[in-house]
Length: 137
Image 1: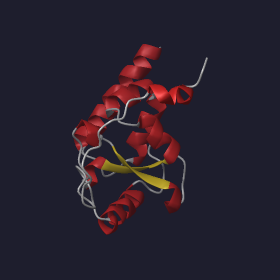
Image 2: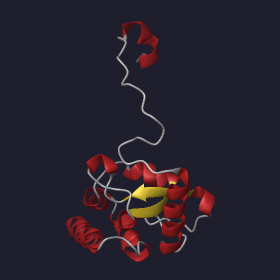
Image 3: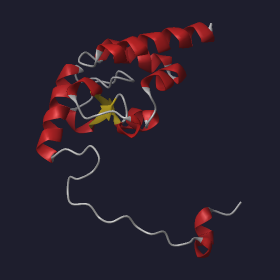
Image 4: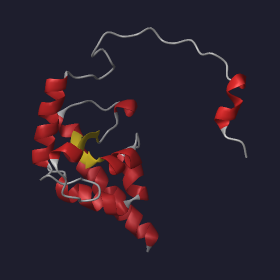
Protein backbone atom coordinates (compact mmCIF):
# COMPACT_ATOMS: atom_id res chain seq x y z
CA UNK A 1 0.00 0.00 0.00
CA UNK A 2 1.41 3.35 -1.00
CA UNK A 3 1.30 6.23 1.43
CA UNK A 4 -0.88 9.16 0.49
CA UNK A 5 2.01 11.63 0.26
CA UNK A 6 3.39 9.74 -2.74
CA UNK A 7 0.41 11.01 -4.69
CA UNK A 8 1.01 14.69 -4.02
CA UNK A 9 0.69 15.41 -7.73
CA UNK A 10 -2.98 14.30 -7.57
CA UNK A 11 -3.95 16.84 -4.94
CA UNK A 12 -5.81 19.93 -6.04
CA UNK A 13 -5.06 23.32 -4.55
CA UNK A 14 -7.67 24.45 -2.06
CA UNK A 15 -8.66 28.08 -1.66
CA UNK A 16 -7.69 29.41 1.75
CA UNK A 17 -10.01 31.25 4.03
CA UNK A 18 -9.02 34.86 4.68
CA UNK A 19 -6.75 35.26 7.67
CA UNK A 20 -8.35 36.45 10.88
CA UNK A 21 -6.96 38.99 13.23
CA UNK A 22 -5.32 37.59 16.31
CA UNK A 23 -7.82 36.17 18.85
CA UNK A 24 -10.78 36.30 16.48
CA UNK A 25 -11.51 32.60 16.37
CA UNK A 26 -14.99 31.36 17.13
CA UNK A 27 -14.47 31.01 20.89
CA UNK A 28 -11.05 32.53 21.45
CA UNK A 29 -9.63 33.93 24.64
CA UNK A 30 -6.63 36.12 25.29
CA UNK A 31 -3.67 34.15 26.70
CA UNK A 32 -4.00 35.75 30.16
CA UNK A 33 -7.69 34.81 30.38
CA UNK A 34 -6.96 31.28 29.14
CA UNK A 35 -4.24 30.86 31.76
CA UNK A 36 -6.57 32.10 34.52
CA UNK A 37 -9.25 29.60 33.44
CA UNK A 38 -6.67 26.80 33.30
CA UNK A 39 -5.40 27.67 36.79
CA UNK A 40 -8.94 27.67 38.19
CA UNK A 41 -9.83 24.38 36.48
CA UNK A 42 -6.55 22.81 37.68
CA UNK A 43 -7.39 23.81 41.24
CA UNK A 44 -11.02 22.66 40.94
CA UNK A 45 -9.99 19.23 39.62
CA UNK A 46 -7.52 18.65 42.49
CA UNK A 47 -4.57 18.53 40.06
CA UNK A 48 -5.91 15.32 38.47
CA UNK A 49 -6.71 14.45 34.90
CA UNK A 50 -10.48 14.12 35.07
CA UNK A 51 -10.48 11.15 32.66
CA UNK A 52 -7.61 8.87 33.76
CA UNK A 53 -7.06 10.19 37.31
CA UNK A 54 -3.35 10.92 36.84
CA UNK A 55 -1.97 13.50 39.29
CA UNK A 56 -0.23 15.82 36.86
CA UNK A 57 1.97 18.89 37.09
CA UNK A 58 0.48 22.15 35.86
CA UNK A 59 2.69 22.15 32.76
CA UNK A 60 1.27 18.82 31.54
CA UNK A 61 -2.36 19.82 32.09
CA UNK A 62 -4.45 20.78 29.08
CA UNK A 63 -7.72 22.66 29.19
CA UNK A 64 -10.58 20.49 27.95
CA UNK A 65 -14.09 21.57 27.01
CA UNK A 66 -16.51 18.95 28.35
CA UNK A 67 -19.08 20.07 25.80
CA UNK A 68 -16.79 20.61 22.78
CA UNK A 69 -16.65 23.99 21.06
CA UNK A 70 -17.21 22.18 17.76
CA UNK A 71 -20.54 20.97 19.15
CA UNK A 72 -21.74 24.23 20.69
CA UNK A 73 -19.79 24.38 23.96
CA UNK A 74 -18.27 27.58 25.32
CA UNK A 75 -15.14 28.53 27.23
CA UNK A 76 -16.91 29.05 30.53
CA UNK A 77 -15.85 27.71 33.94
CA UNK A 78 -18.72 25.19 34.16
CA UNK A 79 -17.63 23.60 30.87
CA UNK A 80 -13.86 23.48 31.47
CA UNK A 81 -11.80 20.77 33.13
CA UNK A 82 -8.14 19.78 32.98
CA UNK A 83 -7.00 16.61 31.28
CA UNK A 84 -3.66 15.12 30.31
CA UNK A 85 -2.75 15.44 26.64
CA UNK A 86 -3.45 11.80 25.66
CA UNK A 87 -6.91 11.82 27.28
CA UNK A 88 -7.77 15.18 25.72
CA UNK A 89 -6.82 13.88 22.28
CA UNK A 90 -8.72 10.62 22.89
CA UNK A 91 -11.90 12.53 23.78
CA UNK A 92 -11.41 14.90 20.82
CA UNK A 93 -14.77 16.51 19.94
CA UNK A 94 -17.06 13.81 21.34
CA UNK A 95 -20.00 14.63 23.56
CA UNK A 96 -19.42 13.46 27.13
CA UNK A 97 -22.07 10.73 26.91
CA UNK A 98 -20.45 9.33 23.74
CA UNK A 99 -17.01 9.32 25.33
CA UNK A 100 -18.18 7.82 28.64
CA UNK A 101 -20.21 5.14 26.87
CA UNK A 102 -17.00 4.02 25.17
CA UNK A 103 -14.75 4.55 28.22
CA UNK A 104 -16.84 4.11 31.41
CA UNK A 105 -13.75 4.23 33.65
CA UNK A 106 -13.08 7.73 32.37
CA UNK A 107 -16.64 8.64 33.31
CA UNK A 108 -16.13 7.38 36.85
CA UNK A 109 -12.99 9.50 37.18
CA UNK A 110 -14.87 12.46 35.73
CA UNK A 111 -17.57 12.10 38.38
CA UNK A 112 -14.89 11.86 41.07
CA UNK A 113 -12.60 14.75 40.03
CA UNK A 114 -14.66 17.27 38.03
CA UNK A 115 -16.00 19.34 40.91
CA UNK A 116 -16.92 22.59 39.18
CA UNK A 117 -18.76 21.43 36.05
CA UNK A 118 -22.43 22.10 35.34
CA UNK A 119 -24.86 19.76 37.09
CA UNK A 120 -26.41 18.53 33.87
CA UNK A 121 -22.98 17.47 32.55
CA UNK A 122 -22.35 15.46 35.71
CA UNK A 123 -25.83 13.91 35.54
CA UNK A 124 -25.24 12.92 31.93
CA UNK A 125 -21.91 11.37 32.93
CA UNK A 126 -23.55 9.29 35.68
CA UNK A 127 -26.23 8.11 33.25
CA UNK A 128 -23.72 7.21 30.52
CA UNK A 129 -21.46 5.33 32.94
CA UNK A 130 -24.32 3.32 34.43
CA UNK A 131 -25.63 2.42 30.96
CA UNK A 132 -22.15 1.43 29.77
CA UNK A 133 -21.58 -0.85 32.78
CA UNK A 134 -25.08 -2.34 32.37
CA UNK A 135 -24.36 -3.18 28.72
CA UNK A 136 -21.00 -4.71 29.64
CA UNK A 137 -22.59 -7.04 32.22
